[in-house]
Amino acid sequence: MKYAFILKAVLHSISHRKFSVFTSIFAISAAFAFLAAIGCVSFGLAATAVNSSLAFPLIVGPAGASDTTLVMSTLFNTDKPAGTIDYEVAEKLEKDERVSSVFPIARSDSYMGIPITGVESAYINEIVSRFWDIDPMIDAKDIFGGQNINCAVVGAKAAMRYDMSVWDTFFGSHGTVGDEDAHIHDFKYKVCAVMEPLNGPEDFAIFTSLKSVWEIHKHGHHHHHHEDAEDEEHEHEEAEEEHEEHNHHEAEHDEHEHSSEGKITAVLVKTKNPVFTAALEREYSENGFTSATDTGRTVRKLMSYMNKAEDAAGFFSYGTLFLVMIMVFVAILTSVNERKREMALMRTLGIGKLPISLMIFLELLFISVSGIALGILGGHALLAFCKPAIDFELGINLEPFFFTEIEFRGAVYTLIAGIILSLAAMVKIYRMNLVEEIAKD
Image 1: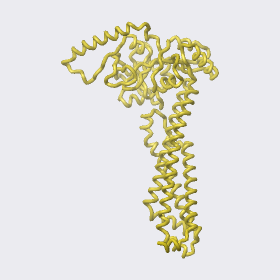
Image 2: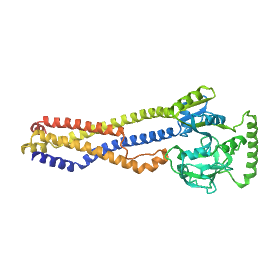
Image 3: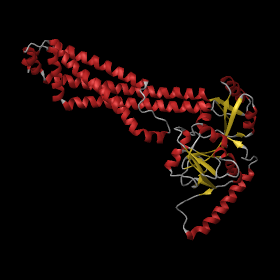
Image 4: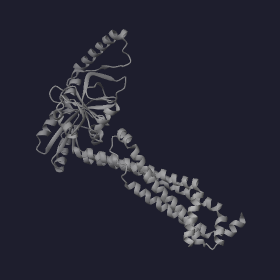
């Protein structure tokens, strides 16, 4: 009977302190939702990186290139290539009995900051099985075959961002940043296909044929491009300046002793087993002409750095949760001082110290558990709502309702902190002499 009365008293207290209780629960849930976001986004990034690394166990690039540069510039398109190697390297690897398939790539230029990468049709067949849209005149299995030298295959999210569709044309910028002052190649690309979403770096990439990359750099197809400076009265003057600049670049190009034709930036290699991967990595790293990296090992190394960042973010989130719990504890103690007369009345009705102390314990525990539950539900619901934007901007396959380890630890730590603080408040109430406290007031 007494404990039923205590439960009713707890509910009565919560209902009369709605704003204070709601604020406390919201503070805990907000901190916990942030923790849930850290865990899910980190997991999504790790899963995307691991899936990408499993596709191509070995990467061979120019001598002196670091493992990280090889991976980031080929699989993730977030770094500049370290240099070039001869196409013959890919041909040699293709003849190696330890290799199942090779995919030479050549970083071309960029369009609006999106990298344009030269590949062969086999690479497109390897990474995508279907297209959102494709030119009906193009063979999907040999998309860069024949005379399709201007053909470009666009990633799903790149096409969405810049409203690109089949038969659209565009010009690539020299380098990796496509601003208005960049050198624009006069080599016109035509969108031949738009890939289906892959939830990876390929969604923010544009692929063209190796032949187009060699053609661009062989003949120096570039000029300064200013979209806003095309007034008709200056057209002839601009044409003359463009012609002079083109001749200048042609002269510079003729001075180079080597041609870019036949040059690639790296080779993605699929080996028959991990032992062959290790052997080929050693061979192509020690010959003095190329560098090679075990993709899985390099990605695991990158993941270790990411885990450290996740741990650091988690540490600050745990600290925030602890401070919130202290705030809730102080709020409860403040409310206790305001409810001395109420508790004294309960003592006169025959309610002992332990049940009254238990009432405060249950209030704090209710706030802690409610904050955790609301944080879990609210955090994952918010991630589900933001999933399209997160996937689009980060290029990761986010799992909004995946409960991660960092989130589990956060729930345990918060619950333990809530129980400890609840017990501390309970002890304080139990040791309080209500008659003396009221007399003081």
